[in-house]
Length: 378
Image 1 (cartoon, rainbow, N blue to C red):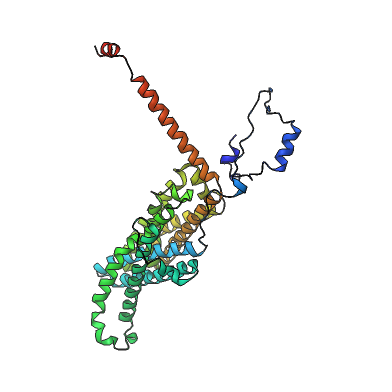
Image 2 (image 1 turned 120 degrees about the vertical axis):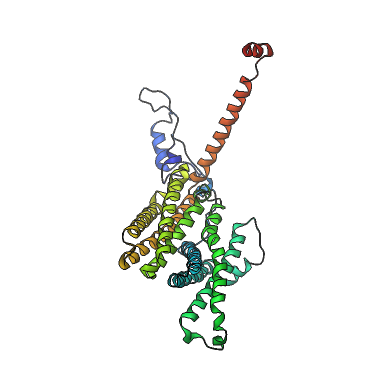
């Protein structure tokens, strides 16, 4: 009786009535409702309809691969900025350099993909005209803009320090200030790095898309863990093995957080977790789990070798990228199918009615006459 509600791919029917095959089948039955083996009347299968066969909510107009790449690059850049500040504070110059290069390059590339999705560069500038604390998009714009500028400046200072031949046009005179400026810009970018890895998850969860909105508590942990796995994996792959210890720890910890949080997203939210397990999103998420788990395991086993670090870093970065694509595709699939909007609404209504009925029954049971109550007390 719930085929139209819970069967994958049968989420909605056209509002102009059942398909022609179903009408012909009903006509052959003579319009009878009885279909039981013993002639007992049965109810027809539920028809799940929407107006003109259209989705109930409007799917986001974000494009692929622009937005998934923006999500991946921003997460990797944010965690790399934090890793770079930690390495700088401990005097690990090799890891500091690689982490700041990763953060600066990832931040600039993420802005490029975001602007490409917007269509015109000035639209990004329009997002900075006002700040609205209640809007994740507005707050995220004021995280992305300073983070990108600071990480790019830090990476540029690293380049100038590593290659003195680039210090032209009077820069040699102020080259002594480069280490102090680098610490300043790198430290401030690390402050923005943490929110950079998670604000996009808050942005997705703040929409009406069912498979993004329901796991609003877990999705930031998925993105944080995914960003840590990607940033740690990339830095681990390009840093000398003796200096890559913090990157290995970040990568393994991030992979564990991502896998645990993603499991809750897929299995703790009823029908809205279904898109993460079916079709193209399901294949992407399975591949992401395989890459992330394999990369974390290889990091523990062979991460202290040059080849092992490179392979495990590539697997972790690939797993993070596939996770972002899978989450994006699952959300779009849930927005296109009305059952993921209506079924949870009906479940919430039924739960409220059941709670109201239980509350009413409890209040009626407590209306005991005074003499009876005193007798029970005695």
